[in-house]
Amino acid sequence: MNSAAAKPNRRIRLLAAIGLVAILGSAAVGSVAVATLRTARAGAATTSEPSDTPTAAPSDTPISTPSDTPIPTPSDTPTPAPPSPSASPTAKPAPSVHEYFVANGTEPATAADPFHPGVVAVASENITWHSVTSGCSRPVVRISRDNGANWGAASFPWGWQCQDIHAVLAWGPNGRLWAGNAVGSGGGVAMSMTYSDDLGKSWSKRFLEHFNPPWVGCFPAITVDDWPNSPNYGTVYVAYNWLRNKYGPGVSLMASKDGSNWVHTEVPLDPGTATYPYAWRIGYRIEAAPDGTAVVSFYQATLKYWSTAHIFDEGSGNNIGRRGYETSLVHFDGKKLTADRPLWAADVDHDTARWQSGLAVDDAGHAWLAVETRGKVRLGQVGGAWRDISVPGKYSFKPSVALSGRTIFVGWHARDNSGHVYTYYTLSYDGGETFLPPALVNKAWWSLRAADNAAMNGVGLRENADFANGMIYYTYGDYRSGTGVYMAQIRP
Image (cartoon, rainbow, N blue to C red):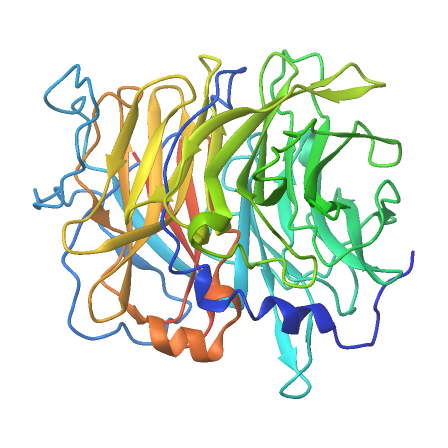
């Protein structure tokens, strides 16, 4: 494997251009009917009013909201979805929220072990600047065995090497923790996979894909088929981008049952038109489904012109034809991997929405997509009804979604006119028919301007939530006292 072991990762500087773009995104939410998502997931929430000053630096003591605290009824009510089958959510006990400081770092991703209650892992990036023009990131994994209250020592899946800044995680059967990220290869980066069977104490020999030419892209997403009755139980799926041709990035997919033998395919993409022959794609997500399929989603903007020298620049005005999210159904028969032609799932109103979305597949066979648009979070099923969720007076962005049975969790950030960023969530107990009013995860806020000056990609770019064994784990970047990774443990 050719990796950038000791050299500064020049790509980190390139990605600094993303910066605040990731934070300022707006979103729309949709979902794709496919197979079923993990049933071992459930969640809860509490609410409190934001304070006028940032919360002090975290310690090892958890910030918690007592489980017997009733939920106030704020005016931050999500816009009802048409139609609204019921006037109020299903009655449930007041949920509890415990927030824990995980570690200093940025770009967190989380995964909960569906087979071992209380076991949860977080990957984060640790960027060291060597100069004003170059830096190095060493991805770190930390594991908790008590629902996030305490975290083990840092584990380095790629050793003490300078690698990419978008590491992702997923748990599989038998306590196997998969980790994926881009590593140095040739003149760019390539997708790399490894796994640990001993809670991060050791990692397998790394697999470096050679299905695609190295590029500056990748931005990976992974999932494991944890459905016991699925024909592909235990299979890991990976989605990542690469430079398909001068007209735009492709959506590349890999799958493996053992981590050594991998198969590959590409999503058959839209051919473009005479007016809009180019397309910019990024923000991939992938989720396994109980019938042995998987769903991949991605942001796409159709453009009159796009340059490989300025990959994040979509232009403006009439250079942009359409932008939003597409989804594709993925099939694996143990030997061959294929993907259906994608379907358009949701429109968004601006380019910064591309950085963060949430994808989940429920146990009724539907995939749910959460994205940003017009300062709101939009949630729904592909081909079904959509719901806007927002906080009055604040701009909502960067949604995450997780679900179990008929319980749906949505987490997101919202900024006010002063540039203060807060973290919110809501819950549905009736399959998305109704939702609780948006509630604050904590009383803390942090400054958008301060984070932009000190952190990469707005402190968190691949944030997500996971649902396992009746507990929601929502992990996010936060700049209340420097670059930090936090986890909210939410119990119904």
